Image 1 (tube, rainbow, N blue to C red):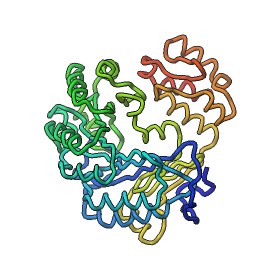
Image 2 (image 1 turned 60 degrees about the vertical axis):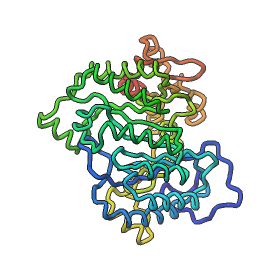
Image 3 (image 1 turned 90 degrees about the horizontal axis):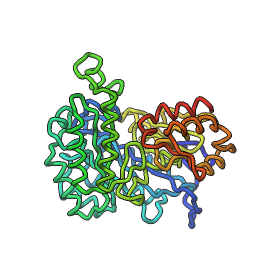
Image 4 (image 1 turned 90 degrees about the vertical axis):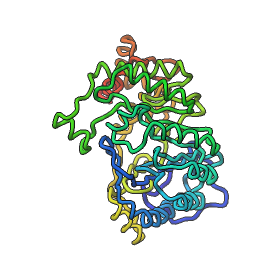
Length: 399
């Protein structure tokens, strides 16, 4: 693990022969621009696109400052915001700087989030030519009424057009995001969305429940009685239906909200978060993790640009996690995945076995059909996944 602190630039250049790495890191780049802010979204973004040129220049400086010869990377993920609102030449400059300054391993997964309505066929062809090999498409729904409620700027036709253009451009690894648990949404209508999504034959699907995050317009509407969330029992039925329908369509669940056609088509980048593998975040609000320290950038585009123009990293804060906090995170994140928690890895990391720490709760919740513990691996059942937060809390109480 690197000896310098999270977010601090290294003072040495790359060695001629990079060191060997057991677990390659992930690189996340936050593009903080949207044409319009969705009412449910609490990710940091702004709609003032005039700041894009200065942001790109600042990002290029941050890439150089955070280049770390002690890390190799096998995933690059551009999220947001809406990365697809960036001009093609700006995206090209960003990726060129990454390849120049950051040690990327062969066959690196390079993902860009795109929103229908912000891309063209020519744009996607240019993405493929510049080495992007995975797209994550923010579809959210295949029903116009849902898209309007969610404040999306695209239509259902633009979703299918984006998928068609991506295939024509040569992309063979596509992901779609969907949202369920909307007010007035029935189980039948969610099933229709699942059917239409699976019919697109994409490699990956992420199905998230709508959450009313503090500070969002949607949460304000909830507080003021303008919207009502569906019953928890209905949302649970929607989750169960999701697992069943997608399994029938050939998708394997590998995390509470994520499904892929095979293990090889899982999001390699997102798995790093769940396994506490090192990752470096660039851009406003982005987080970095080098165990045991996490740091994060300022949530302000102007401040971000100003700091980097002055040669300073735009760090807003940092925290060093103690052993109990690391165990807590390992449990919460590990139980979200269908692979669960690897007992050998856990023991190596913390010097104590799962049985020593959690023997009683493993036995009790196993008898209730909420989890399995076999061959040293602790994982939730489908029923346990419905109660993942409550089950994880049972373990955390014993830390």
